[in-house]
Image 1: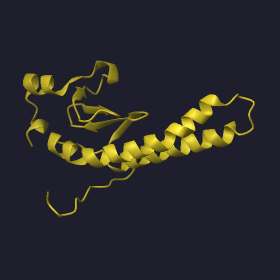
Image 2: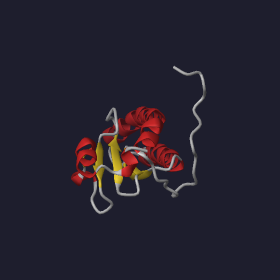
Image 3: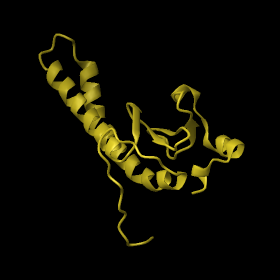
Length: 138
């Protein structure tokens, strides 16, 4: 393992970048770590919220905490250039469509076109074998 520090491109929110497969894979460990930390922070908040009755005066405070954790995670993903599609669901724009990832998947293994969503995603290997896209080789 190299002792050189990784430097990641940080972008403005809502300014997704176009990724090659190797760029996405390089960014993946950081993205996974950020998401895992946010997930661990949100889980007890989610459980507390589920256990509360709607009339509990603390509900609004817990909801605000929940929202803050989610918004913070979304902002971090967007600053990395990713497209957030849902809770713990982020896509890498390839210029042809999206490399699709959802926590807790351990690798980027799916793809879908711009006009399709999570439900239509396909195994990445199938896309590479069928289409041989440039972004998979750069």
